[in-house]
Structures are given as C-alpha cells and as structure tokens.
Length: 567
Image 1 (cartoon, rainbow, N blue to C red):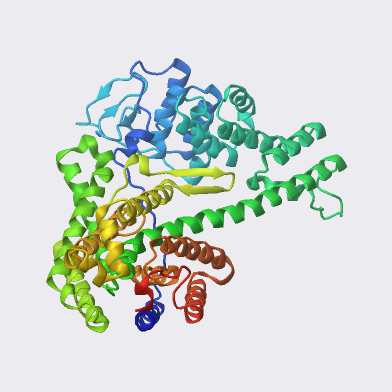
Image 2: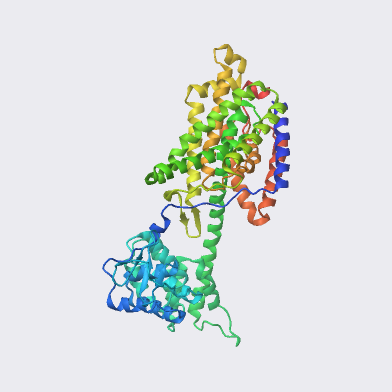
C-alpha cells in the first residue's frame, strides 16, 4: 500500500506541475441558451389595435429625430397603456420600422411578419420603403424604465420581476404614483422589495424632510446595497463645509441604514463564498467520482479519465441534436434522456479499455499510466476528427437556465444548483451500487482480499471489468453535468484530470465517501482563498497544502480498512 501511495503521489505531483505550467482555470463560462427565448420574452401586438391617444403617441415615433422619438416614449409613459409595450420592445430590439407614409410597423421576432400596431393588422413587406427610428443612448435610457413601468402590472411574475429590477436602478419621478400603486397590489415579496427601493430612491430627493426620513428608514429595512452610495452622499459635506443633508434626523438614520447594509453585505459575502465553494466542489466531485472507483478501488492509474468526462459531454451534445432533429417539441427533456445514454456509452468505452488493454497491466502502475495516457491522446484526436477542434454548442433546457436567488446579494445560476443536486444523485447512485447490490459486495470483497474472494467463487476478472465499466459510466454522468457549465471540446477532460486525482488521493484511496468530503472541502477552501490571493495563487496554495498533508498522512483523510490496506 505504501509503495502504491508513493506512485500515486508521484503522478499527482507531475500532473500538478503540468497544470501550473498550462495555467488552467477551474471555472469556465456558464451557458444558458434557450430554445424560443425570444418568444418567451416578447409581447405580441394586440389584435384590436391601440387606443386613440396611444396611437397618436406611437405615430410620433415615425421620425429620424431622436428627440421626437424620446418625446413619444415619455408620452407613452404618461398614458401608462400596456398595449404600447410591444412597440417599445420592438424599438429596443431594433424591430420597429416606419414606411414612406410614416406608418409605424412592428416586425414579429419569430416570423418576421410586419404588423401595424395601431390597427393590429398584418402588412406585406413588398413595395415598402422601410426606415428605422434612431436608437441613441438617451433613447435607451428613457426606454428601459418605461418598459419596466408597463410590465410591472403584468400577470407574469418573471416580467414583473424584470421590470422591478429595471425600475429599482432607473426610476423616473413621473412614475412615483404608479410605483406606489404597484406596491399596494404586489403579492411577491421580491418584486415588492424592488419597488420599495425604486420609491425610496425617488423620495430621497424630496423637499420634505419627513419624506426623506421615511425613505431612509425604508432603505434600512430592505438593506439594499444599490442605495448605499446615495446614503453616503447624504452624509457628505459641501464646499461650504455644511452637510448636503440639512436634517440631523435624516443623517443619523442614514448612518444606521449604512451600518445595516454593510452588516448584510458581510453575511452575504460569506454565504456567497460558501455556496459557490459547494458548487465548485460539486463540479470537482462529479469529475472525480468515477476515478474514485477506478483509481481508488481498482488501483488503476487511469490518465484517460478526463476523456471519459469528455465522451459523456459529447454524448449529451449528440442527444441534444437528436431531439432538435426528431423531437423538437420535447427539447426541454433532452438532458434527462442524456443521463442513461451517457452512462451506457462511457461504460461501453470503459469495458473496451479494460478488456483490450488494462487487464494485462494490473499491478504494473508505470505501464498502466503510459497506456492510459496513450488512450487519452487517441480519444482526444478521435473527437477532434469527428467533431472538429472547436468547441461544440450544448444548449441548456429552459428549466435549467436562469438563476436562483438564495438571499439578497446571494444568487446562483440554475445550472450550478442543478449540478449540486445532480452530484447528490450520483453520490446516492454510487452508494447504492457499492452497498446494496451484488456487484458492490463482490467489488468490496475483491478490494479487501482478492485471493480469498476468488477462493469463495467470485470471478475477479469479471468484477474488474464491471467495476471499470461502472467507474467509466459515472465519469460519463459527470460529463453530462459539465456540458451545462463549461465549454465542450476535445480538451475538456484535461482541465479536470489533476483535480480528480487530488480529490481521490486526499479523500483516501479506496474510500468513495472520502472523495465526497475532499471535493467539497477543496471547492470551499479554494473559493474563500480566491478573493485574497487570486485564482491562480489559490490553486497553487491548495495543491501545496494537499501535498504537505499527503506527506504527513499518505493514506488520506479516511484511511482504507481491510487487509489490502497493508499491501
């Protein structure tokens, strides 16, 4: 066992050095592409047209003068007619036109069909001389809050939430009564909080000290960081040495509100680092869990493990394309279908590796390392030949996109939350496989005493094959999860092979639950270090700490129990 741990440590040190030279980062760009995204976010033109005053304001947008367009937008804000929303969204998306007769037309985001918003009728494009109204920065600044104002009474919660976010950042004084009305009607706590922020932002500039005081007290309750700078300005002194805020009560309330905001920011920072650390740890766990079976239980130094992750990700890509081509109506379920397909596909690859090469190299770690490294190069080049050297696009289903707000200032992308839940599922699957199935019983028997298990009738060769297949299949599941949060390409697996070996060796070779603890611990530790040292230095310090720990305790956090522990 000690000799094997020396081999394992040597492999990890070499791989860590290569990783440091390559300067590979743990995280990657998150993907949240959706089918029919435009359809979900766009409101259609009303079929019965617009009211007379609204129609007059819309007609004024048929102009090349940006001031005329801005005046028309402000007029629509005064009218507060939700039927004008499709026109404003079309202007924002550059789908608004006017023809030679100065008739305003809206282009459908999906079909490209032109429609007259005033009458609600479709218009043929042929023979029209179309022009676009200007979309300058002043127009954009006026447009966004007006769209938010019109969406705030929508029956759809996502639209109201988006509108409230916009209004909280850029409210306009003319909207104050509308905002108060919206707060009284709103049932959702987060939307109501954002609307109160918008109201408080406007009321901080009120001439009445009592109104300003009430606004500051509201800010102290909601503890919104976006209003912290405005509160600090109340405490600033002007050129004459006098406070900008003349009322002492308002200044004292502003100090209390700032302290409350800063206290919440400290708590949110710790919780945010903890949550993101668990997320990073879950990614590491999914990448390493298959290796915990292959390397931890079988003592096979599998340098092609990263490529098993890559195969799982590419299988997800193929399943996605199959659904797009043959079952587009069920696209949102392709990720569910990809889970068993990826497991089976990578398990078959694992069986081919074990039966074709690895079974001849057991107890020969150097030859196994070189052989699996060669297999990894073959797999990388095969994927590069089949799919090209560029990354492929794996879109997330609609239910796997967006973000989840855990608390004010702490949010996590839905894909990351999904990865955490999926990691729990995979850990439960591995536990069930190892503890509640005949294969798991035989694996544990062979791991603890191979000769005694064989004497009792257990086919060690068959167990080796199915154990390697199970480890490869679990790696394929990790590839499914990684396809949703990182770029899928031929080099995907190379970014995780070092970390995977670190997880297994630190947790304790042969102890799957040890890998769970070490992966989550590495993720949290790294996330808390990054703000202080930077991402690269955090990784170097983490690797250094792990190496020193393994030198002190070679068996890892959880020592292997059984006769094989002394081999």
